[in-house]
Image (cartoon, rainbow, N blue to C red; front, side, top):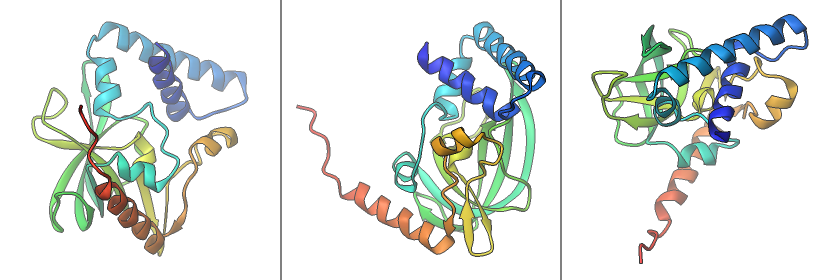
Length: 208
C-alpha cells in the first residue's frame, strides 16, 4: 500500500507539477484520483507501473542509476509517439545510439524506450544519455524494449558540453530529493565508467 501511494504521489507531482494555488491542488487531486481508479480497475496496472516503468525508487546519484541499469547509452531521440494500454497512457520513443557506455548495445543501433505519460522529459532530435532497464516484449510492446530508470531520473539532457536531469517542474523541496545532477558530459561519462567498474568487481553473493 505504501509503495502504491508513493507511485500515486510521484505521478501527481510529475503530471501536474507542484503548485500553491487551490485550483492547481484541486486539479492534481483529481488527476491522482483518475490514476487510482485506473489501478483499481486494472489488476496488472500496479505491476506495470512498478516493474515495467521502474518508478517508485529514488536515484540521487550517477552511481545509483548505474547500478540499476541494464544499458547506458548516449544517443539522439529520432521518433516518439503516445499509446494506451489498459486505460493508461504511455510514450514510446526511439533512440539512435551514438555512444555505448554500458551493456550489450552497439553504436548505430536503434532502441525503443517506454515511459508513463508525464514521466518523459525528452523531445525529438534531442541529444541525451539514458540509463535503461531491459524488458522483454509483453502487453505493452510486441518487441523487447527499455525503460529509463526511475522515469525522468534516468534521462539526462545534453546541452553543449554539459548534461543534467530536468527537474524544473518539481517544487524546491522535491528538487532536493531529485537533484538535477548537472555536470560536464566528460565527468558524467567518467562517473558511469567508474560506477560500472566497481559493480563488476563486486564478489558474487553467496546463496548458502
